[in-house]
Image (cartoon, rainbow, N blue to C red; front, side):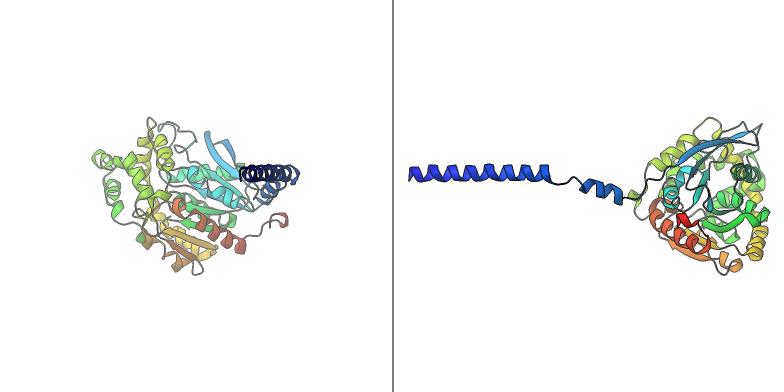
Length: 337
């Protein structure tokens, strides 16, 4: 029996050794193509360029990606953010389109000139963005407007309707129905213009308020990166920036009388329009979405179960809606289809 056990152990050992040798040979001889197939099948990496240009004497930063000869999309950000809000959307659209997202003066990586030297108004922002589009050689472009981007972009559209190929509106207002409870203290400041009412809304520049804008109305806040409010607040906390933001809150009053002008532009020119709205937004409430249909009967409206910054939680779905919409209304070069 002892001899049998020794022989059995020898056979098992030899078998294990042979299996190890076969496995080693298989690994050595197997063509190393799996990783190559994975790489070749992957989508190409989109390179985003970060540029600055002097516009009306102000250094203006923008993010740009996509083919130079492709139809252009101009992404205009809101408060309190910057082109950073489009960091994920830009690569999602840049395969077929030239995507450009600027920062307004006093926001993001653009210059922050002294308030005595530069007037922080929506009219001035529209002039800056117009100058940037001309410097970049944009003869026509689709507009994605969000929050503050709406009064900036709609000024451009009403002034140069021939340049606008399409409108994408995301929680951006052009109707009285969109301004509700949140705006009451700001409207009080519009009416008085005094220091007391100005100070009463300073909290809107605080970290608490910035985080609230990103998380309020969001069913699953784990989808919102803390980088969002951290980055925005870093720019808001720069010395003098709070006063710039308070100037802009006050100047927002100049947008309300222009609603009729922008609505007239919609009715006359009927640009293809896609409306995307976080329906739980307390800043620009969902009631501001449906009225676009009054002047743009062919507008497509999609509501999402989220808050003000809908891209943070529904970026993939929104990008898909945009690609489908633009694919039906804009023609990309044959090489980019």
